[in-house]
Image (cartoon, rainbow, N blue to C red; front, top):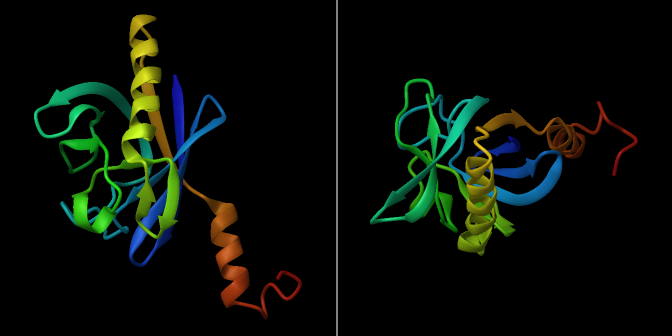
Length: 152
């Protein structure tokens, strides 16, 4: 099963849109990009295997495997990237700002159902993280009107 996370990077956080087999599933929030530094940066773009995990702190959640120069990168519930994440990804049902969202546990529950279904079919789950070029160009059009004079 293929999951795709399209990110938009901002100074104070990273927002994303998560698609599963090409269909929208939820939004995500993360820390801003800070050169992949442990505990203060989102992880690099790339393709990672997603595995089920249980812990006392987060209950049922997901783990990304083989993240370069990082370990224990989780997909777990959080509604504020700056206050609750240390490099992990939080799924959210709604975005409420940069690096902020609502109803994270609800969004995670949907991901866990899909991961469990894949596991029952002995199918691996992979997450591919990319940047959202459309959002980047939309942001540029607001700040560089001489380059993009016809957009509003």
